[in-house]
Image (tube, rainbow, N blue to C red; front, side, top):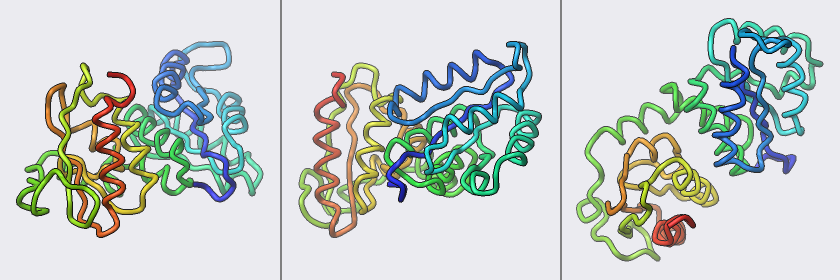
Length: 246
């Protein structure tokens, strides 16, 4: 959790008002407590970007924990940079323009903010969508051979001690889509030990979603951390419950 106790805010800077508002709607499904501000289009609703809208968006998103700006095209970044130049120094220090895909990066950032992560962690989460910190490894894990629990951890079906795993059959009709994936990541973020789901980091939203787990598939929640048993159990119970939607 950010030191202030407040959550990092997110501003979506797009050339289109509709795109910015749609991204807020999407991210809000997974991050209902985060200040998500659209800054799309020009002041009179045409295609373009607006210095005034971006400046107002930063002010609306800022609760003291920081603000991350996700932009869609190059000139949107220029507008955001200009807006930052006019901020007071103390505000500018806690505002970041994140060079990441606006959809995937924005959603990942919003989920991290919802979990209470600080600005650096929220930016890092967004950068996973751009192959940034955690991105390469997450993608490699997602695209490579999944860890086989029996081989790596010495067996599945247990869960209260070190090097253990639990296997759950996914009951969600739509599989492990965005909303349950976000719930999984938010729960995993509350535990310090590293936990994996089918071999990928349980705290990486994009890696979890990239698994493409469908209804009826098995998910293997595992840890090699001696203190990871409670995290494995909690995530397994959440998955077994259908993430509240099954």
